[in-house]
Length: 208
Image (cartoon, rainbow, N blue to C red):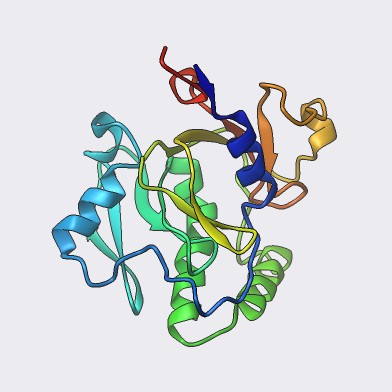
């Protein structure tokens, strides 16, 4: 039995870490075929979800909608840094709120904006009302085996997980879980797009 918790805790603590490093190669492959990129997007959720979702494919100019869905979900490969590869499916609430900041971020990257500039513009967007935090509970699927994150200057593989909207929540709100203990964790604490992250049992303990 091999626990994933130490890796998971490291990822959570550094999920939005950004470090300029020209030696790192982005893990998202813009040169892959449209079909391959759609398949990567759909890997974020069970086929019962992603197969009926709206699908966005990331190109160098930003996201392109390639399919309209019927279940309210929207799936894409998110990138919290330009080196990340995060297949993600937002439910209807996330589609109406958080997803808009993700589409905006890649549009601004394509224009050559810096990460600091994009972060500041999104922050201002929330304050001005252009962007809105989720208004009710909901789920984000990130169950792909092909998730890579920039963590402390290195690109690492992230385990599949489920996330739940927790706008502006703090660690105290979820019981201040200590390191190494199998409890839900918080990502982007205090932010409008904060999430509670949960790792499925089959991921936390391989061999079961």
